[in-house]
Image 1 (tube, rainbow, N blue to C red):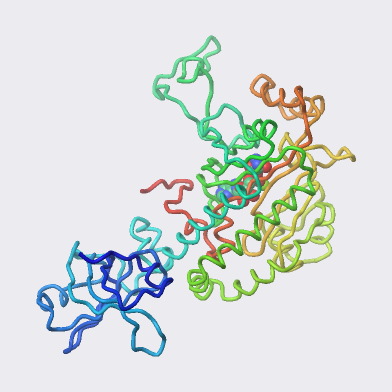
Image 2 (image 1 turned 60 degrees about the horizontal axis):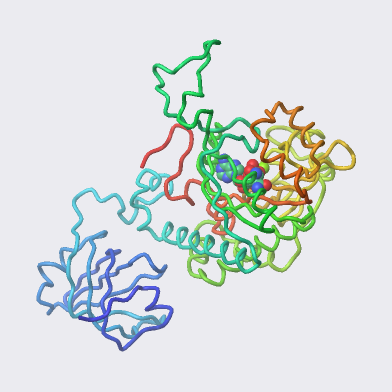
Length: 464
Ligand code: 4AD
Ligand code: MG
């Protein structure tokens, strides 16, 4: 039996004058008197493999001529350099076997492939050129994430998915409960008695692994989490998901400048890793969806990120006199996506790190600034996406943190362990969260977040 090859191996190692077998799905079939071209792909590479089939093959009439798009096949033969203008490898077929036939109504016909349509057949879209490319890049970015942090001495920490604390304090959490919805136990005040629930308390899906990551950073120095994150915010946009993946490094003894540098190095590493390991996927996606992105990303690698304060950003936005859909911004208000994109896309034309936001619009754990008004926060904004990273130096002063929690009505008893970190050998520390899907969007040039995660979860949708 001849050895089975992946297309990726065949093309990258230029395997030729070798007997072999490939298994995959038919992309197209062209028949003629002499025989047929059967083009297949196994999902491992952007490029398809052309299999040349002679009409003298025993099952030419019964199998080869009946093949349609989507059929799965096993093809055996000799890999050779093709004769065409562009040098490539093709298969001189000696045997072809139908593995799985296609019944009628196969949705992935050549033409019907708008991204909107493909979202409705998300279980089949991995077979298209576009989704193969996106998800190979996504894989490489995940691998690059582990490599980047591992090579820098970070430890990968798995933080819990079920939690009782609201890290971001935004109240956008999905409840985890085994109580009977129709007949929940009530307490004396006629409120639901969560002490009767599975964990004997209210629990939720995490909105971030940060608080738990901080505890391990303050024992192991540098850790990162990379896991699923859940938010029940009612945001039906092209940049929000209800379930997304976040990469969260947390480092003891780092301040905000160290944090910004780490974020810059990490983002640049992701870009260059994708360029090096997925050049064909990148070229395909940029060519089809974001023509100038390749050049722009090269430029990003070569130049430092812009760094400005929130106060500065507000001045720039106001001075621009640009008409924004939701109006301009006043100091103290959060930047809208359109403001963030204006800064990154039009004003600076590259990634921008905005620091020192008003404390009223940021989470309780951020380190308070000298001025009493701001916190040592940082958001990284990139062209095409807007906010891709949110992070901060953390408040390491016990009293300041307790006061802030009181102001924000966070029950101290839920966070006793978090406060302990400030009681026992507290140190300055900092971290951030990168929205993994937003990073995939930025690097691939895909403009809808629902096209960079296998099965998107968003309000009123949990199909598949
Ligand atoms: O800015 P966020 O809310 O920060 C945190 O959760 C911190 N606890 C992170 C940390 O410091 N360890 O979220 C971080 C990033 C955002 O910049 C964005 O890229 C992404 O997570 N994000 C979302 N991505 C997709 N869908 C959503 N609903 C998202 N919400 C946040
Ligand atoms: Mg944020």
